[in-house]
Length: 625
Image (cartoon, rainbow, N blue to C red; front, side):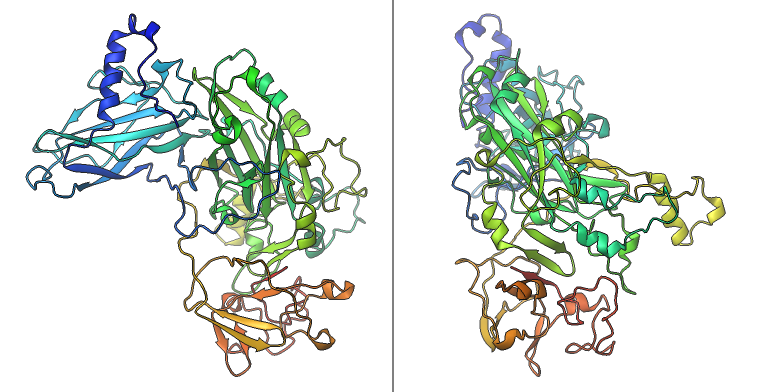
C-alpha cells in the first residue's frame, strides 16, 4: 500500500505552505523511534484491531471463480461518532535508560483516513482527520487513561486538523509518546477502525428473510376453525437453512458514483444476522469468527453488527474511478439458527420459549468512500434494492442447533459451490407462490422483509408477567391475538466485544478404534472449538445390517441408502460401555439412562416434543455430514 505521507503535488505548494509544513512534520513524526517509551496495544472504545486470530484454521477450499483478494484483518473495530475514545498501553524500549523511560512527558494522537490506493492523493487536505497536537503532561499529573476525539471542536493546541468522521469511513491512527529526555517514539504500526451507523435512522438496510421462513411465523386469525400448525412442525418446514447473496454489479457501482469522479479509497460492509452468520465476498470468507457472530444478547433489545473492510475486493488494489469500473462482485451470507431459531425443545433447566425468536434474518449495507471524502451507500437490504440486488435460497445446512449440532448435506454443498461468486449469479423473476419450488434447495428467490406485530414494549410486559414481576391487570399495552408471532428485533449497535475466535490449533493426543466404524479422538483437554479434517472427511463405514451404535444413526439417509458420517462431542469416554460421556447437553435433563446419567429411565424421552429422532433418547451435540 502506498504511503499517504508522500510529498504534496507541486501545484499545491504555493497556496498551502503552512498546511504542507505541518504535514511534512507529521510525516517525520509518525515514524520517529528515538524515544525510550513505546506505545503498544492501541484500542478504541476498548476494541483492538485483530490482524489474524492465533488459531485461525487453514484457508478453506475455494471455488475456481473465487477472488484472489484477501481480507486484511480478522476483526475490525467499528465505533460510532458519538463515542471515540482512544486508549493504549506502553513499555520501555529495550536498553533504554531508566531515567529516560521513567515518565511520559507528552503524547500526540494522529488519525488519518484510510486509503488503499497509492495514487489517490488528490485531496491531501482530507487525509489527516484529527491531530491532537503535542499535549504536554505536567510532572505532577498522572498520564491520562484515555483520550477522546470530539469531532469539530477546536484543539487546545490549535492544530489545523479536526474534521468530522462519517458512517462508512475507515481510519488509521497512531500514538506518539515523549520520554523524560523529550524524545518521541511512535507506535510501531498504524491501528485501524471504522465508523458505523450511529442508530437505526442511519441504516438504510432492513431485516430480510426467506419468504417461506417468514410464512411459518404467520398465524391467520380469520376463522376459528383454522388449525395452527404445531411449532415443531413449523420449525421443520424452515429446514434447510437459507443462503443470502447480493450483486454489486459494475453498472450499479458506476451509477452510484456518477458525478463523483474521484478515486475509490475504501469500502466498508456492515452486517448482522440472527441467529448466527458468516459473510463472504466473491467466494472468500471474511472472518474466522463467522459461525458465532453476533454475540448473544437479548435480541429483542439490541443486536450487534460487524464491519468488514472489503476495499481490496472492490478496487483490486488499483486506482479506480467510476469510469474505470468493470468488475462485478457478489456478497454471500451463510446463516445458522444460533440462539434465535433453535429447535423448540424445552426442559426443566432451559426455557427456550422465553427467548426471542423468529425466522433467520440478516441486515446489511455497503459504504463506498472516494478520495474527496464522499460516502455512498449501496445494495442495502431494503425495498427496491432488495428486489434488484438480493436473493435467497435454501442451502446445504439442513439443521443447525446449539445443543443438537448441525446436519450438512455434502451433495448440496458440492452442487452449490461458488454460489457467492459472480459466475454463479442468475437473474430471477418475481417470487412465485409458496407451493412452487420455494422450499427447494438451490432455488433462488427474492427475500421478504422481516415482519412482526409484536412491539418491544409488548414483549417486555409479557416477559415481566411470566416472571411474576407484573400483574396482568397492570400491563399498559393491550393484550390481543397476533397475526405474526415473530419476536421484535432490537436496535443495532456495533460489536462492543471482540468476537469469539480460534485461539489455538489442537491436535488429538490419542486416537482409538472403538469398533463398529467408530473412532475416538482424544484431545486431552476440555475446550470449545470446531473440528478440521486436513485431508477431508473420512470414508463412511456402514455397520452390518445398518445397526448403528447408540446415537450414531441418521434415519433419513439410511432410508434412501445415502452414506453419512456422525461426529458426537463429549468430555470423556465411559470405558465400561465404550460410549462417550455427553455431559455437554446432559445438563438439559433430556437423557434416559446414558452412561453416568440415570436421572430418567430408558424411554423417558420417547414422547418429548421435537426430540431429535436419531439420538436414541439421549440428547447429544453432534454433527452429521
